[in-house]
Amino acid sequence: MENPFNDTYFMKKALQEAETAFEKGEIPVGAVIVVDNKIIARTHNLTELLHDVTAHAEMQAITSAANYLGGKYLKGCTLYVTLEPCQMCAGALYWSQISKIVFGARDEQRGFIKMGTQLHPKTEVVSGVLANEAADLMVRFFASKRK
Image (cartoon, rainbow, N blue to C red; front, top):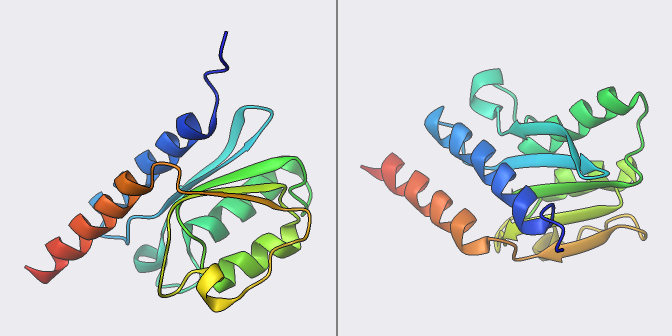
């Protein structure tokens, strides 16, 4: 029997967080951190609410997961995030030593790949999981802001 807890399953949870961000007027990026098929952090962008440019979904998730685990390293954890992390978030993920990052849509302008930001050498990266759904959410958000 196939394990129902796969990358698509957890990315759907991150997309739910992104939808929540959208509803709050935040740029719709959602993130969850998982260890042993259990979600230990569930967050979305909070930059507008907190008036904080560092309050990206990934940063919120790192803090939440570290608090849950009682330590600063996220070894054995996987981050699912709807948009490719920026270089700030990639830097924080580097220091957290997270084991795996799964992201949906690429950020061709500000993503860590475009910016040449390095992740921890032991971090595995998977891209493109539910990328169309994540990208569509971003397009809808910015279209609603231009009206």
